[in-house]
Every structure is written in C-alpha cells, then in structure tokens.
Length: 369
Ligand SMILES: *Cc1c(COP(=O)(O)O)cnc(C)c1O
Image 1 (cartoon, rainbow, N blue to C red):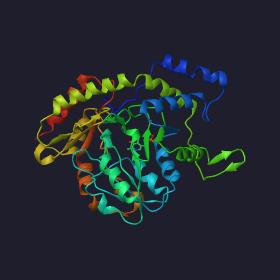
Image 2: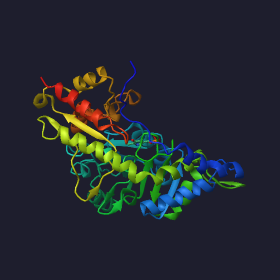
Image 3: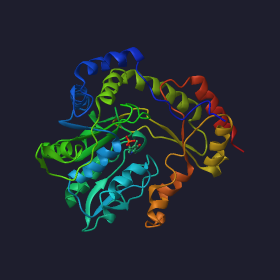
Image 4: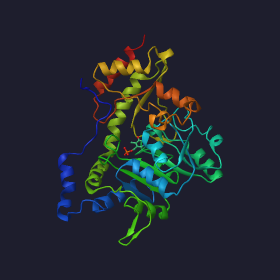
C-alpha cells in the first residue's frame, strides 16, 4: 500500500525560480569546485547565522566527519546514542571511540548531569546533538568543556533557524554542523555546513573537502571529496528566500498538533524551551503506554493501516546497531533506551493540511484502550 500521508515532504521553490537561479551556470560552465553559487550561499549563510566562518559540504555527515578530522582528535568522544546514525559513524570513521552519555527525559538532549562522570584522561571532545531542534544545555556543556580542555562539536542538523538567547545554534561550540538534506527545514537537495570561528580550522576544512589539496603541487591532508556543487548551492539560495514562510507554515501545523494532543494522559509532547525560537522541524510524541492505553508500536501500526507514515525516530539507538557487535552497553543509557522504544515523530511538513493533522490525531487518540 502506498502511504497517503508521508512523515515528511521536501519543500521546493517554484520551478521558474530555480531555473532562473541556475541559468547563469550555463554561461559559466562552472558546475562545482567552489563556484559563484557556492560562494554566494556561503556568504548568505554567514550572514543568516551571524557567524564568522561557514564551510559548505556535500552533506551534513561529511561536515561532521571532516570537522572531527580537522580538529586532529584522538581518543574518546562523549556523545549520545539518541540520534541519527551519522553522529556516531562520524566518530567511529575517524578512529575515535564513542562514549555514550544518557539523554534527559524532558527534551532528549545530552543529560549534562551525567556528562562529567564519563570524562577520562582519554576524552578529547564532546559531540552533543540538538535533537528535534531542542537546544542542548549549551552553557553547562561549555563550562565542562572549558574545565577539562575538551573540544565541542555540535550536531546541529535539526536546528536550522533555531536561536537560543537571540543567537543561532551555529554560534555554539568549536564547530556546529548542519544538514541541508532534502528532509530538513532548509535544504540544498543534499548538503551541509560547518560553522566555527577559527580561521585556521577553516583552512583545514576547505582542504579536507577537496582531497587535502593545498595547491596544484601540494597535498597536506588525507582528505575526502565533499564539495557542494553549484546546482545544490543554487537550490539553497532559492530556499533561503522562502525560509520564513516555510517555518510559518510548519508552525501552524505544530500548533494544530499541540491543540489536539495537549493534556492527554500518558502522552508527552516536546517542551517549549525557554529563550529558544524554534524551527518546528519535528513533532515527536512520547507514549507512556500504561497511562495512555496503547504502545508506541500500536499507534504506529494504526497510522500505517490508514496510510499514514509516522517514524520511530530514533529507534534503534546507535549504540545497539548491528555493525557495533554489542561493543556498547545499552543499559548505561536507560533514558535513551526508554525514549527510543516509546517515541514517534508524526508527519510534519510545510504543506501538510490541517485536516490531515486532525485525522492523524483522531487515529492516535482512538488507539487508547
Ligand atoms: C540528517 C542528519 C545528519 C546527516 O545529515 P546528511 O545531510 O543526511 O548527511 C546528521 N545528524 C542528524 C541528527 C541528522 O538528522
């Protein structure tokens, strides 16, 4: 059966707008390798984020992976398992050892009360995730990182457009990495960015995304190929113009969900965080089966039967992936384990009709026994 309502649907600019944006690529024949569109998007994002340095990549994963490489890290990186595969893989693919910190049960970001106990003399960095667009406890993380001399690399893939105390999440940590994948609030089809302050780090990142090449006769690093091409950058330039509308439409969907699902026993909605301007990226709902009267999986199945795809996001936890062959003890992150077994993200995208939201909520609530 094909699903009638998908969990997400990529926003697109008008076809004519995109065609106009890419027209001059035919004049220049410059398709990739940091061309005009790449530079324009880079500058536009520096301005939008209010940060000094932005480096663009083929995707968010390469931003994370190459940021870790550029920082020359060795040893253990403290992170959380309640995230997309990318976060943990970026650590492991750098030959670093992930150490999993539990999440807090309120906003599902790293539980900073449990962070310090995990620091050893092998710890080199902290890699927290602003999961669902919820901002981590950035102040506490900064304080701990300073105390122990650790680098902080934020997985900010979910927080495009989010600010905390008036500052973009791009401004926190040594590096803050975004994903511009088609499913994200802002996209370049595939794409990503690393945001940071240190211009020396910028030089290394610029080289690492282009094979480590310094100039035509010198190669300084064992780099990758992770350059954003001109067509993707052009999509970003278009989508950036419509970002406010994108977020406003998402906001209306989220408000409808909140209206229909607030105050239901056993059903936990995302907190409204203080000092945070949200981007309405996701609508996660945690089901406490005993109080709600149905399990997450039962709700998932009921929605699927009606042609509605919700997503068990994030399940399974990354520290239980088959590829890690039981290397990590999932019992050490009990809150993350509980949340991953009981959470469901409901369909959310800019053009999701409010009647569909009503229908989704009716089905969710009808699962109660
Ligand atoms: C999307 C995402 C990534 C990876 O981004 P890509 O652009 O798909 O490579 C990393 N971390 C999180 C939390 C994500 O949601």
